[in-house]
Length: 83
View 1 (cartoon, rainbow, N blue to C red):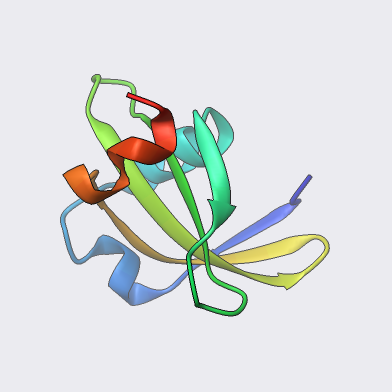
View 2 (view 1 turned 90 degrees about the vertical axis):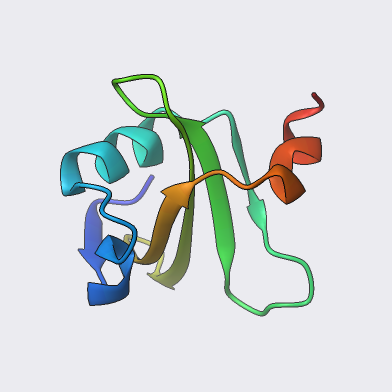
């Protein structure tokens, strides 16, 4: 769907690599809007080494996203996975 992925500097704050982030962004278990936040979305998935990550992004246009957050998934988002 998205052809271009841009990264905000803040996406690397929690020491997740670009490779991990790209993997989760492409191989996610959940994708949806973040409650009460316009144009902010979350994807949750496992990175190649098996850690569950949360990736937050904005849609710039129909082909481009800006990833601004990536970290180990917090328990607050587990219900999104129907666990």
